[in-house]
Length: 494
Length: 130
Figure 1: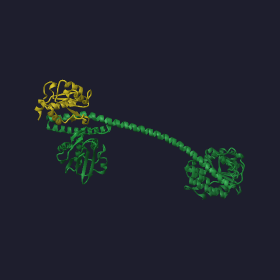
Figure 2: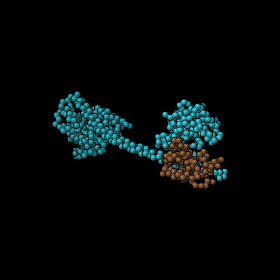
Figure 3: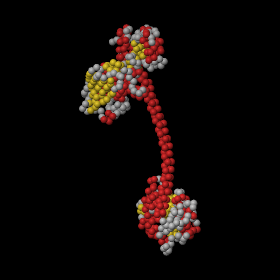
């Protein structure tokens, strides 16, 4: 505690903390901010005890636990005599609060009626007998977060002091005023009091009284208030710093944990992709044997027609399975090896590749019409197998999703620098929602019906093959124009 | 069905580490009336090439002991072998060395027969073509 605040000028009428408690001026409305309950009990006991000793009438409004703690610090004989002679009135803070509050607010009439009765009983026909009171109710309200009700009660106490000419001691726990947010509350409480009861100063007993000087009093009080603010702020700051270092430590921990989790997830992902790649490779060999053997059996013509048809189903299913495995392996190699590997031929005839794919598709879909149009020179630096793969995907999609009653058209167009292959079909356009992830892996539309040739990887792989050729794969779709997928890539590689 | 005689009379050498594939291919080749010999890896295949000159080598890539790539390199170093017709039979055509024809797995038997008919100069292939 800074000594300047507890200088001899602390209170103009000569009252210091000790004097305020022992001999409070009439109409003083003092407030004390306590750090620990013990400090409060000690001061209230001194306030009450000195009052009883000096013949003052005393009103004590306190909660049961505080009342007991205060009583422990008083002379029991003095207390029992005071109670018997109606020098001391002890009221329960909660009971009084219940009696004087309506809803959330303090009713001044109810309070005055109650206090009038208590004061009249204590004075017992001696109207000018000195009365002092200690009230814990404001503290109770503030602790409960009901600060507005507490401030209202302070005002009502102020009116009562004017009516009955007595002195009052209030107290609040200082912890409730820590932090910048509580400065307004602290100021409001101070504004409603005339005196501030601080902690004791070492030299207090020896302090001389000084003459009244209103401006000095005002100044001292504002300094006191400011000091309270600063102490509160300091404590709040200390707490904030503590909280912050704790939060920072927690943050560091969580960043660490997140990093570990991410590393682990990345390792898991890499493991999964490698695992899938190995699985795909290993599935291929037995499937190759199944397909080659089944085809051989069909070719040898040793089987009855029924058995041969059944074996056809084995082959068709095997081929579908094979395509899925190839797609999975394309995706894993695309991801593990940073792009799909291509082996280019500098003079690949793309028109011939398109013709092969169209012939295959016509054979497999005898009821569909597939047109092939070739325009300009169509040799390019390309991986023939991969370009065929793209065209198979695009033609297969056009047949699966297009209007079956109208032709699918494949246009191969060679220009000076670029080569493009367009696959067009009529029919409903690709919807917007679906279009957004058309080239994403494993995002096959939920609406796509019927048998699909793969896992929804076809367009993704086709695009990656286009990219590997230094080209692009894009789509144009509308109800009027139908849907066109266009593969474009440079004819020669730089 | 299979042509009688020793390995040196073979038309096609099948090099694959999968026995089932080797046997299926042998059966397919014999269906054409050709003679096939097999090897489980490049090293075994090179050993067999000391005593025979097939019309065609069907070569897998991923094999233990000696891979298809290693066998091709070894063949390039010997003028006699460098002239042999080789077709790569692989599940990963993208990994095939440039300039060597590829017969992707699972093998399309019609394409295999095309290859044999085009490359085999011995009488077996021509007599059993249809």
